[in-house]
Length: 154
Image 1: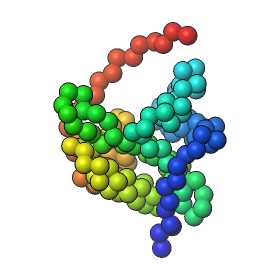
Image 2: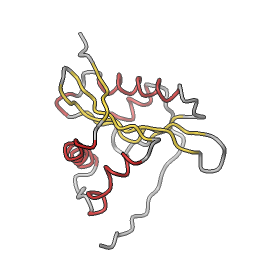
Image 3: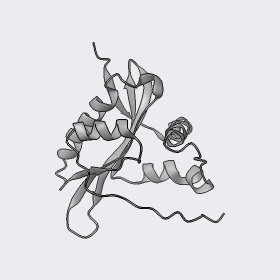
């Protein structure tokens, strides 16, 4: 029997707990991740300050099992809205239980009610499990994102 899943808002008073879990998430994606000062000082407040973003704890069996960040944004060039799933993280001990899939399905349903022209997300290269999950939910690979890193001055 699947555990009851709840998505609950991350409150301002839970900033430190969220940031610790977010660091764990980003270190799994990139073991060399070290949060820069601007990340530490503004990441959470910028998320909370954008009315279009939704940041939720993923709770299973009464325990925090991860988080999801999603929302709506204006299309860059057209008078349309785009749904976006920015982050979906499930702690290692809670994986392979269907939590990510159930969470994703709930968020997709919520975003669709807001009538976006599309829902998009990014998957880090090499994250085959995440890619397989999203493709199983109907997402298609439509582009390749290239990044040129620039050092941030302190």
